[in-house]
Length: 380
Image (tube, rainbow, N blue to C red; front, top):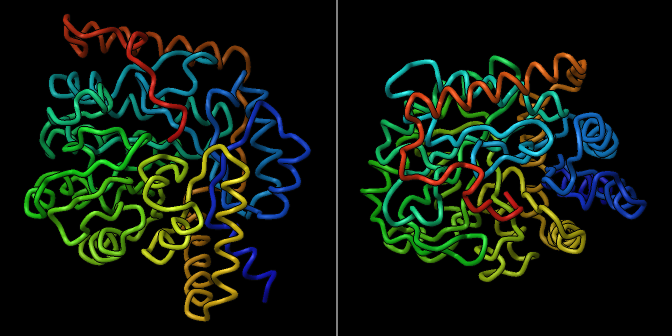
C-alpha cells in the first residue's frame, strides 16, 4: 500500500529543474517521487537539442504520459525567445484578430510548432484574464481583451491552432486575475469583485471554452466578496470543486499555479498548501524550482494519506483520474526533431509573423516594444 500511496502522491506533482541537464541529486529525487511531469524555464533551455535531451532524461524518471510543460504566451512570457525567436504578445495578436480573422489561429500554430521542436507537449497558455484597469500594471500585454467576448474571440482559434499540432493549452488564471492589483508571485491578491460580476464576466471564458481547454490553471488570488472568502482559489473547494467542476462542468485537468509563489506560501506552509489543494479538487500541483519544497509537499501528501483513511481514498482516486487525463493530453511518442533547415524556416516564419502583427496595428504607437516589457518572474 505504501508504494501505491507514494506513486499516487508523486503523480500529483509537476516539478521544475535547476539547469540545462539533470544533476545526480535531481535524478535521485525524480526517481523517488516519479512526478506527473516537469516544467522548464529559460534557465533550463540553451537550444532545441539540449532541451529535448533534458526532457527525455527527466520524462524517463516521471510517471507515464508525463506533462512536459513550458510557458509560451508570447511577449513578456516567452521561454524560447532567446533560443528560437520572440513571439508577439497575445494582446497584440488579439487586437489584429479583431481586424483580420485567422491571426490568432496562426499564433497558436506557431507556438505549437515551436514548443514541439523543443520536445514539449504543453504550453501554459492562453491567459483568459480580463484586461481591466486594476490589473494593467501587473498583467501588461498578457491579457487579450477587456470583455469576455474579446477574450474568447482570441482564445478559441488560438487553442484550435495548438490542437492542430497536438499541443495542449492551459487556460489561466481561474477564476480570473483581471480585478487584481497585486502580483500573486509576491502576495495573495484580494480581488474585490462580486460573485455576480465574476460569473458574468471573468468566468465566462471558462464556461464557453470548457470543452476546448485541455487544462485549466487555478490562481492564488482570493475573492472576499464570494463564498470563497479570503482563501486562495488554488486551495479552495468552493472554486475548484463547486464552481469549476460542478457548476461549470469542467472535465479536463485542473492545474495549480506555482505553489512556490508568495500568493500561496504567505497564506499556508507548502505542506498545508499541497494537502488543501488535493482536498479542494486539484489534479496537479506545480512546484517550479526548490527541491526542498517539492519533497516537503510530496512527503506531506504521503504522510496525510497514511494518517487519514478518507484522504488516502481521495488521493488514490484523484491520482487515477489525473493519470487518465494526462494520457489524453500527453502522447508517449515524442515528435521528431526538426532538421537545421526546418528549424531556421520556423524561426523565419515566427519573425515574419511578428512583423506582420506589428504592421497590422497589433502594437499601438505609444506602447513599449515587446522586448522592452519587464519579463514576468521566472515561475509560471
